[in-house]
Length: 386
Image (tube, rainbow, N blue to C red; front, top):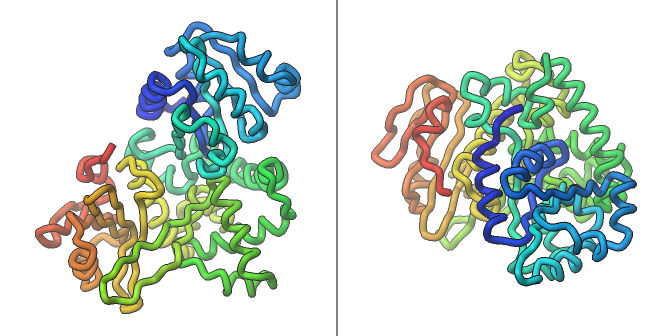
């Protein structure tokens, strides 16, 4: 098992300040395993309810009766299946003194879950658990992480072939069972074709008209498909940044398959050699690096953007926290150079710094505020914000 100490420490800290903490993440990303490792450090009285287990659901037939008795820590897994539990948790969270803390696990985006938990405002903290990061598996296994992705079972498989089999099975189960459980009433074959099409548009601007025409449906329909996969935490929509610069700026999000291993499964690329011979090589690496940067920096989705003008200037990742603006470019090259686009981004966006992450071995300055950083040096060269 891979130690996820940073996440465990942050979640433990939240549980000391909030009566209810929600760990959110895609299916199979390791929420249940992490909760099991955290629970004994918080209490010697632990009650667990798996809302996919019929016997546990039977125990929750009267949720107030079932949840008001346990003391210590109560863990509720797959809580998005029973949104009617949130009003009960509000009542129990308000008891004085606090006798019980609740750790709830969900496979839906915070915004989606928040719609069901408004009554817990001020009582609940949300923590999104991502896939494995380079800092957790070690730089010597970074290529494996890129190829197989950050789902623990896919990463730890005995071979690339077994890893691919797991990911293909995950995709089938996700489309046939998990999405319907989230209230998505769209045929599995349709969503599979749509998800595969997104894989071919990975790291590109969202164009609802183009994709809608390919499907023979309205723009609003494919937009709904996209939002459903985003809410299920398997697609990232990187929002566009725009402000009054006197330049026309692109206002469409960039679309990424959040996990590089799922991207490669959707594109049928089981090995590194297959990926390196595919036209989506650069896009795949860009998405992987952006995901690793977001994790390492400790930034929230609402703090991350891309930027592009109609004149051709662009920035792969813009991080905005308060008055701080950091820029990142991702280049699948060993010899990056300072470009007019980078100069434009530095000037127009008033960046504190611009980091160009590349595939070479050397880290060196490109200008006073622009640094070329080899990926193997990222963890040391880029300072986390959390």
